[in-house]
Length: 364
Image (cartoon, rainbow, N blue to C red):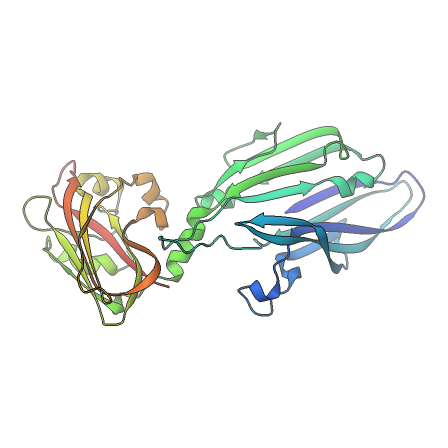
């Protein structure tokens, strides 16, 4: 976040205190994931500059006892993170005050249900103009707010809600501009965004199991360049290609050492080296999955439809949406093996070889 204020002093020399409040939820210390985590860490890299010179800043935290945020039935108190400094403005002078900071997400949207990957809610940001309304008569000559979504779009995120009355300057920058805007009658500007794919992908990578912890056997291979080792090489541009005649009946068997816990097993369907190889070769459309869990006396196969994954999703680079989850649980089980048999395919435009580019195993 970066805010720039152009202030005009029409009176005498002025020496005044300047306070910039940032409101965020306050999570009790015992509920935080990180040890020695302090509330002031919710607002990071805070700086106030006057005419390009950084000013000394003091921090205080004031809990607003009558204000809370409710999430999933829990009430969390809201606090004002107050950053104060001193401004000096000469008579008849103009000064530029710039405030910059990063706001940390105060909580994680995490629910352990029947799915391994967490659910992430939209992030909301409200810019409260009321504190600045006490300068002069509360009216600003020119007000401009720009949302830079370049980094958000790069991580496959998107803007969900934008301030009204603005326009996109290009694919990544949205701006709102007003003249003679009264902050008292227009107290808030808000927007929201989501970065679910990036957050889920980071979570998947964090819990990804090393291929050293399992072995992979396949029904057949289309030669040395398309063997089962390509499934676990962390390279989507290589592939396992089934070598038998026809497009169905091929299988992948994943075996684990006794006592190995597994929560999630995903496949990247198709030959993901390029758009041509992705469409030219066959991709799975349906599969039967049989999971052998140590605590069960018997295992039962289940048949799943495999959603068609658009090439545009794969083209973005590694992300969780590239994968079809053959095994997906909200907790870990001791698994002996997972066998996936492909019963239907999306035919390739040129070749009938069934291809799978990557296999990922993950666990808590």
